[in-house]
Image (cartoon, rainbow, N blue to C red):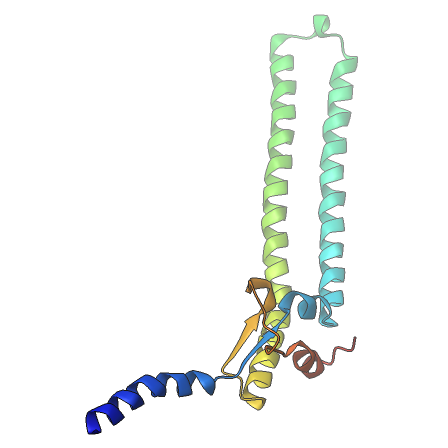
Length: 167
């Protein structure tokens, strides 16, 4: 009899543990896109993009002007050393443009990460607070779920409320 009781407890114990778990889900992409701080981040990134575009356009214009200037000279009157010097100038300008674009893209990526990190942290903190306040064992992202059952709890509204987002 005691063995049957112990066996019954071993079988039932895991089921009671899982029955106590409260699982909720959120749509993190939707919540993140509605955060008010994101507009400021997008504005700063747009300014950075404009600056990069203007500087790149200036280098391109310099290159095109140089090509046009060299094209006006008749090559028959130029010495080989002058032609080589002009080719070197054009190659140097091309390299400067490529280096500028690589450096600018890296700076833009770093700026984007720096500006988005506090917004992402704020959202994570709101999710943790909602989870703690509502005794959720897990809060999952709806974007990663293959199926959400009818009994699943959508905690998106609670997280939005914590972040001050109104629909």
